[in-house]
Picture (cartoon, one colour):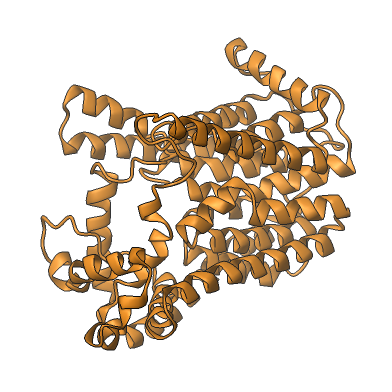
Length: 462
């Protein structure tokens, strides 16, 4: 091992724990994850039953239930003109009435907000065009059929796509039935999946698209479909773009590797251009210029402001806490943000160098590429951790096909991922705990010494 003793000992204990209790078996892993969620929920209930102070929950406050979908979808007042004129929102649940009545005014004034250099009102103009299309269609569904129809439609669509991806996983990877069912649980009912569904965030759809891309890469089949899927995912969230670096471990010639890395980007650009035309027709206020102005407000409020601290899994919570304690001004967050960005780029270069030399296997490289953006960007809410679920599934598949021996590094990685997808803390503590677990995982995969042997290396290209 190339990492220090203070890290080696707890990771060795974690490795031994996973091996001794056979948590690498799908049924046992499923039982363990369910048990952790159940115990945590019971602790929450007992804490509140005895009048425990403060916030102590596995999710956002109840007032924020379905917030990402409801708040954003109701930001398009033109969809609700008739509804509000006729008072047809009176039968809506109070939650959605509050969103409609309290948020439409500021959000509908997007043009004034983005032209105000001191505005701290988040508009919907910072969202990529494909995502805006989803939310505008959601607003139209709310106006015509009611908000619960839109929310349930969102959930049903995610569950249906999750089951479809599970079946594709079983087909492309020849997964045993227990692993296939574990995949379905991880995609649809694990803690980060439930977290995403209670928040109604499109991060879940981005994860399913990324998982499909990874399946085509793992099996070396349907590659062009995988490129389109990743292109769609990048129009929901940009961070998965680094996953094209998984191609570095392939056996293909350098030229073909470059083509395979560029193809998803070209697909993303084409999808973005088409989406921009569609959303501009639906919502003329949305333009490229307004998008960048809205993005600047979002950056000022979240990246350099105090919002977004709840459930934030970014390592930037450390300088934020320090700056708050020292009374530093807004410039402090901007400076530390640039330092983290530079550090992330340097870490990516070092990781790519090691991966290209086969100094880490594909599971470790996937962990590193998934964790690094989460750690270094200013604000990454916990529901974005859903994108680590594909790695959990791939590890379970690999361990079922090649049973581990004591000390197998895959067990350590499985234990770390298991911690990441478990409810470990509250709104204030969970993010920092998960960030530290991700950091330990990155140090682990970067610190492992020696080349990966042929038995331990399964090429990304199949």
